[in-house]
Every structure is written in structure tokens, then in C-alpha cells.
Amino acid sequence: RGINTGELYTFRGKFKALARDYGMGFMAWYWTCWCATGALTYLAIDVGGFEALPLIAKIDGLFGTNVAGSINPQLGNIALALAVNEVLEPVRLPIVVMTTKPVVKYMNRR
Image 1 (tube, rainbow, N blue to C red):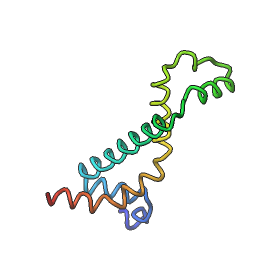
Image 2: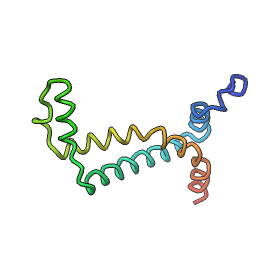
Image 3: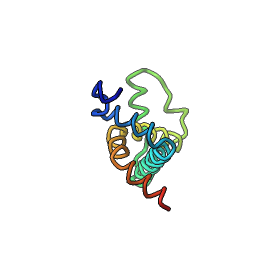
Image 4: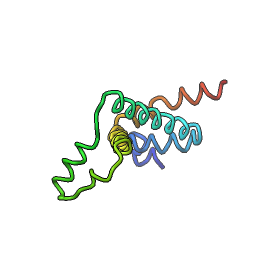
């Protein structure tokens, strides 16, 4: 079906084909990459000394709310790291799609 519609020539089609062909290996590799980029993003925010509360306060000013006053700074940094991690998805997904076959083949060999 995918070859008739040209679906296998898109990243979305390749993603579906990898999920179908490699199943759990693909999902394990995807979530490993997702968790690694999330942890690295949080580490970069924490070590870099960036605080999420001034950013939240600026957003509060735009909407006329006071959310920044009730947020724990540590949880604010975690939320920012999760948001940045989701923004990185267009970069992460093609890398996962391109590296799934060799990684799953290597893991199956062990």
C-alpha cells in the first residue's frame, strides 16, 4: 500500500514502516533518544544557570496572570526542559529514523 501512494518516501511513512518492521526495538531506541535529549536539555539549563521563572513571569505579563509566583523554580526548569525537548522533535525524529536499523541490528547481535 505504501509504495502505491508514495507514503514510504516521506519521513512519516518511513516512521510507520520502521514501527511496523522493527516494533519494540524501534520504540526502545526512540524513547532512549527522547530521554537522553530531555536529560541533556535539563542538564544544560541547570548547569548553564538559566532560570525559567523570569520567562514565566514575562508570559504572565502578556496574559495578565500570576502563575510565576506559585511555581517552584526547580519544577519550572523541568517544565522548560520538557518544552525545549518537544521543540527538538523535528531534529530528533529524522536521526532516530536514520539510525534505527543499525542500532536494532547491533542490539540483536549481542
